[in-house]
Length: 234
Image (tube, rainbow, N blue to C red; front, side, top):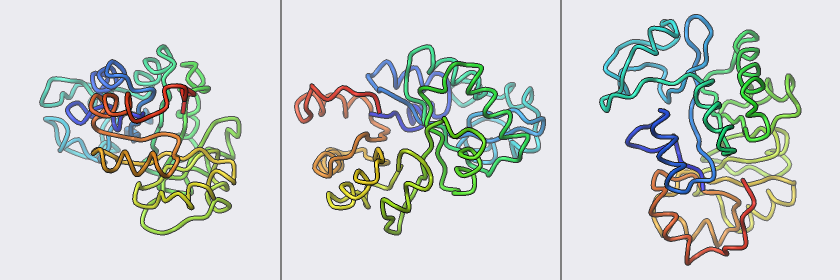
């Protein structure tokens, strides 16, 4: 179980990551953009308008300007270093979604943070942008990476070009598709599954992990629906 953006109430904040972990998630997923001065920070959107009381694109702001902002619930915007220091300390899987394709300097900063925080064994770097995933694979082949994919079918052979996992829309995760992806050596994550019907379909398909906004309800459902012997980290 992966907490999607941490929690929806405090998405992409340390409070959201802590709350997801406290509710029983074995990992968290969050999104990364870079500031004007090259610091990776957590945000789903390219601007701070929706999630904070500030305005403007992250790429036009310095890290200190972004850090000075607060969400409506009073939470600061974390840096990637903040987030990975937390997840590495808890040995949580950290699914790091790259929103843009990083420049060489941005890629260096990403890898430096992953390595300096000790998070490398627990990180899965993923993106809808295949170029972003390929850039990470070329620069750091030891890291786990994944393509994030939706809408169209993708074979195991195609998905395996981008790493050790596939992060796929739950609508594409049929039993036959999951068998194909597994046969290519991939772990399969599905997103975003928030209701028991979606959880049942994911279980029937044989996926390895579910990204959900509803960590606590999922945990309660999984207590009776899932095999307690299956405890491997995603």
